[in-house]
Amino acid sequence: AQSVAQPEDQVNVAEGNPLTVKCTYSVSGNPYLFWYVQYPNRGLQFLLKYITGDNLVKGSYGFEAEFNKSQTSFHLKKPSALVSDSALYFCAVRGSRDYKLSFGAGTTVTVRA
Amino acid sequence: EAGVAQSPRYKIIEKRQSVAFWCNPISGHATLYWYQQILGQGPKLLIQFQNNGVVDDSQLPKDRFSAERLKGVDSTLKIQPAKLEDSAVYLCASRHVREPTYEQYFGPGTRLTVT
Image (cartoon, rainbow over all chains, first blue to last red; front, top):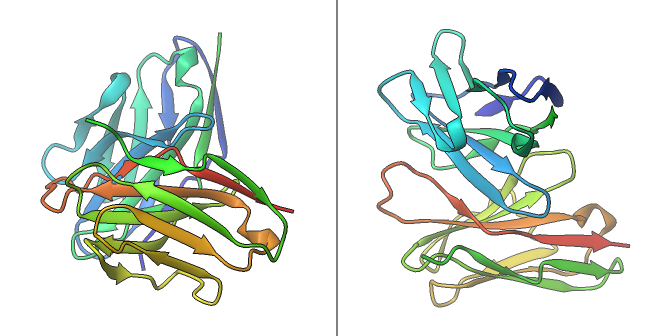
């Protein structure tokens, strides 16, 4: 069975500081990893994905994520957070032989001015 | 291109009543998903369609939930009768069958409150 853990329910940072949202996963075979963001009363918006290749993936709005196979992690990062980055972030995984996408419970990010 | 459309956006019903949600995926997307997102949790897949056929409905509570995609385009998810624990946001997502990156595109969701 595949699963995703987001160990932090909430992350609070000051504007301009680095932002990290943690994610670890468990899956059979090679992982396909995704980050989505959800703003209030909105659907999930795709941020970035890792399928294969370079372990550092760059995505939308200045976000990036680093795939670490040995630690089974896919942490989301942004060098300088903005107040507008305040939202709910979901990590998701699927296996290379399984079409089903499994989501973590989400991490609420609050960026204070 | 237009995104995934869902309606209604909000619905409040009493327990034991029935409710239906509608989803229109992105044009040309053969794969359609319905997810249930309970407050404080990540989305959970309820059912996946490929065109008008069901690929996976293993997590769909079939005693009260049903879904159809008769013409392989838009889809309806129904709950009958509703229970308090069905209060959640119901998300529809779609994907092009030949999308190499497996990215799913989500609609805005329908927030259901069962009282």
